[in-house]
Image (cartoon, rainbow, N blue to C red; front, side, top):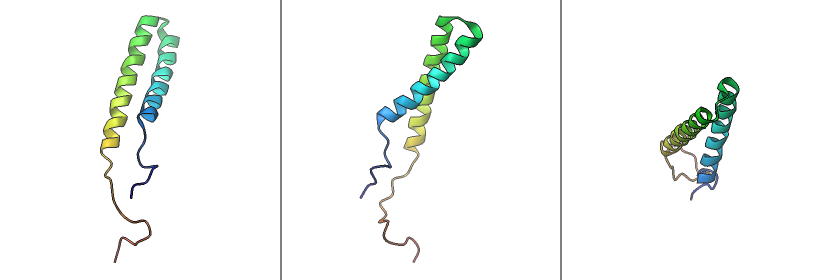
Length: 73
């Protein structure tokens, strides 16, 4: 039996990556006022955060444990 809250969809990963890229984009644009470099920084941030979140999600082990039974005997 799987918990429906244990798996996050791709939409959540993309949303978190987009938010991180937008924050970095605003900060970089405020600092250098160059749209081209800002888009590069935002794009790189999007990719790095997306890969990082996906890698962390792969590290979580799925456990098929009944929540009503105690683990220790």
